[in-house]
Image 1 (cartoon, rainbow, N blue to C red):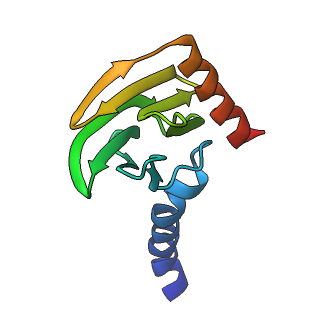
Image 2 (image 1 turned 60 degrees about the horizontal axis):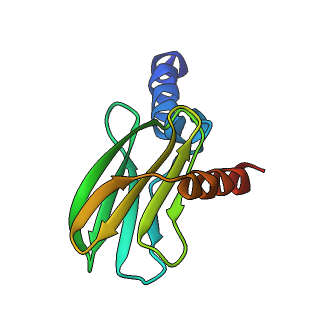
Length: 127
């Protein structure tokens, strides 16, 4: 009798805690990515709508939160362009995005080189 009463509660707790880890193709987990010059870091998080957000820090102070518009329910890769303070992202739902970080200013940029590098990151992650 107790098992019948508590089984739905136990099952609900298991699903609630495991859900973020087995339901997303990207296997999204909060992560931090450090720039090559070690001045900046990105904390990759998700908002309540399942959208990736990039929390950008310099010297442990938050500069900005970028809503990428990419879903955690799709595959994605995020990284820093080598020797540049440019964040690149490729997501299977929205394609390539890139942002330049200079001082405390973050601006959207995108070139063919950024697109190529973002796809390389993605292919390396999922190959």
